[in-house]
Length: 97
Image (tube, rainbow, N blue to C red; front, side, top):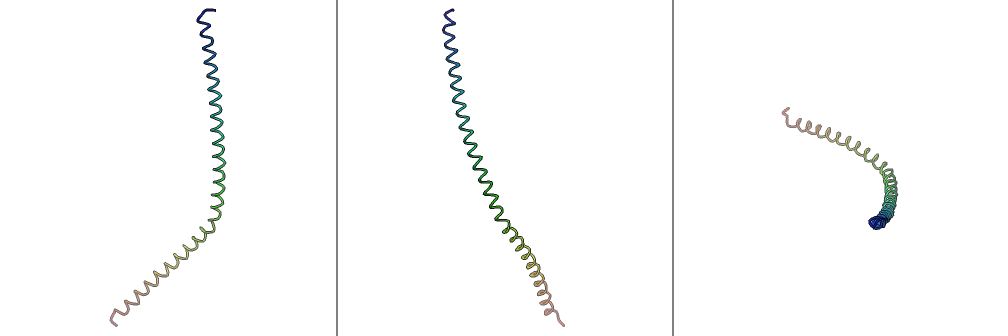
């Protein structure tokens, strides 16, 4: 073996060892990230369930508000009719007989 082969071989082995160590570290990092994402996904699922529950609780309130809006529209229509009747009533007093 030549002198260059003796110095090159340990260098290549050292590089391969470092690459393998880097792979182990990266794998561990990716596993940690994966665990964090799983935790976040569980939290999001919990939040979705809670929002679903809240949405169900607000459905009767929404229906009730719709009914109130319909009633207010009717009352508003009646008020407009009464105002028109009052104007007509006042105008009948202003006209000479």
